[in-house]
Length: 84
Image (cartoon, rainbow, N blue to C red; front, side):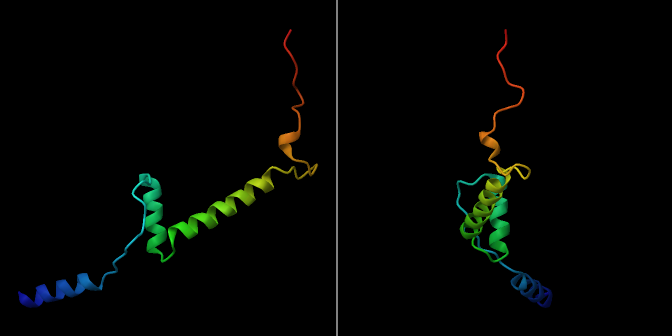
């Protein structure tokens, strides 16, 4: 009986323990994301800053029309007018 207990304790101590520095104010979905990132060995705040910077460059690139090369936000709609 003591041998089984010793083996059980050793097996539990071998499994990895993850300590995540996640803010309490996160939603459940963001908290799961934080725990996953922290469990992979990355810092969540550093990862989030890099992820947001990457998204903003993607957003800037999508605002330029690949056909005309102009910012699509400055172009007027083709079918605009006033109702009579």
